[in-house]
Length: 109
Image (cartoon, rainbow, N blue to C red; front, top):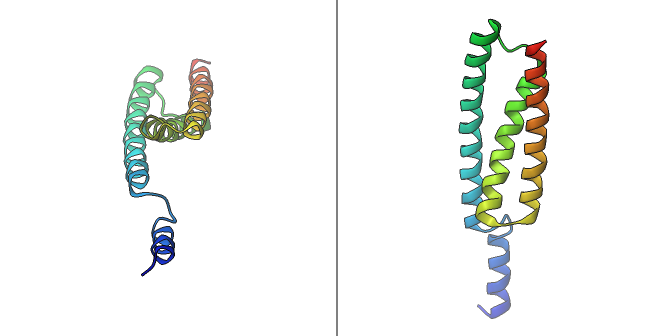
């Protein structure tokens, strides 16, 4: 095998990204799911106890969704130090805050 064949084989093997990035992405999604489930459980318990009603708006579901996604991109941004992941994390945290405010306001009145 000559140099060009080795380089071509390496490009084909690494087409989907490097192994480190794949491991970090998988860990980020696991962490995001765990945080989302925890937020969901806490929110359902608190809202159920305080307001004596189950969660009823779409905003609370969106709040939990954006919390999970923001956690994923925050983890990736910290580990990979990429500006794009930092930008996505910031946007998703802003959406999380937006929907959290809407959800709380809907329960307060």
